[in-house]
Image 1 (cartoon, rainbow, N blue to C red):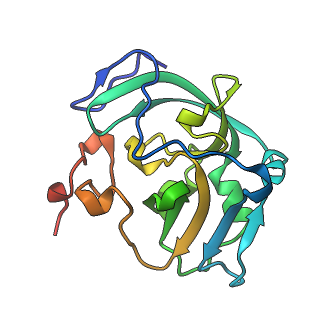
Image 2: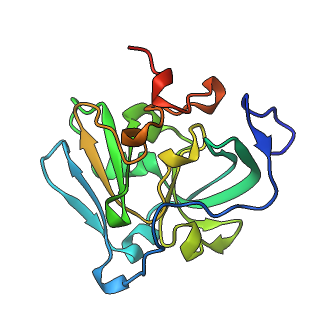
Amino acid sequence: MGTEPLPPGQRTVKGWPVSHYGPVPGFRAARWNLQVFGATATGATYSWTLEEVVALPMTTITTDLHCASGTTTRGHEFFRVAAATMLDLAPPSPKVTHVMAWAEYGYSANLRLADFASDRTLIATHHNGDLLTAEHGFPLRLVVPHLYGYKGPKWLRGIEYMTQDRRGFWEKRGYHNTADPWAEQRHSYQEAD
């Protein structure tokens, strides 16, 4: 990483800047779980404790991260569970087209099912060999490296399967619904009718 071209309009910055809306949530292991719900194939809601998430099959990706503000940070290594594993463990209904990633405080990010199912999309517990810090999303962070960062919420708590699209937190506030950095899809006014 680091020698590949940048998406248009991006510039490289050093480190890993902290960026989020609202306060950093506290973590209470006894009350924490990750849920998959909505239009599941069985109609059931699935739930995992952090210990159960950590016990799932593991994978690692190395990637650049692109912020819609125009910054890119390079060479991040993330580690834990492929998002596609969750689709196997909690299968969606055949009618599902999108997912909503839910985080603490009701933060949400909508994704096309294909973006969530990408072999590069990861539910991370670790960054560069260390546990995520609270500021960077401990205990779980969704990483969707082929989209702008607002599509990968920190403090992930749930995945909702949807049979039609619905805008998430930043998408309701004028950010692009798809968020492809290579197409510079930053703002909702850029969306086709």
